[in-house]
Image (cartoon, rainbow, N blue to C red; front, side, top):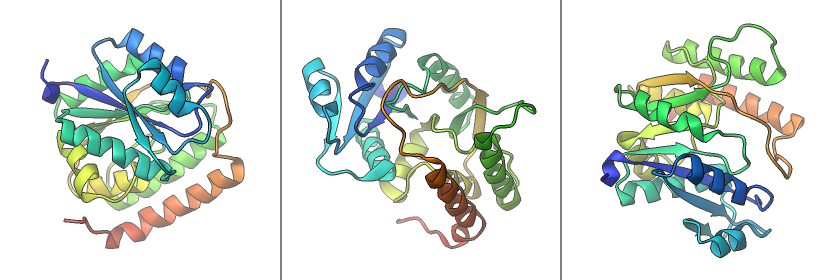
Length: 233
């Protein structure tokens, strides 16, 4: 299979020594035809060493760039290697490999971005995470006219055109405000229902206070800042 027909799993990893081996091993076991690259975001633990010892495909960043810079590095890799699709696949064990093929099938229907949605068709058992996501979904609908059930989901697949946008034109990560921006530029977005679990080990940086600040920033960005955003080229 030629690379333009293949999917690359971009695995951002910052201090994921407790998870990265199991994540990669399960991914390659369940999706043996899938290519992947671990983007080590300047980890200070043994993440890099584990990847080198196991012979994993590794893009090593010498300093911590944060998710936006780390993800963009992975998209540049996908772009210059000629991949037709790239999927963001977290290095903490929350994302499931079995959803990658259905996402690719959706891309083949003509969509630019496919989001693995935790809340698609759900109306009961509201959590704080769901409420926050629904607030951002409302802001996206208000500014673009498009309904996105789970804009905060980190499991997203992008086609070749979107890979090029992130690699060459957008100096931003794949956050909800960027999804809003791309919708305004004409991108077609679809969702498939997925189940996303808890991280296998280690601690998430997204504490309650950090999560609240994130939601506020995203709302302001979607409602105000995106009106003035420009592409690099």
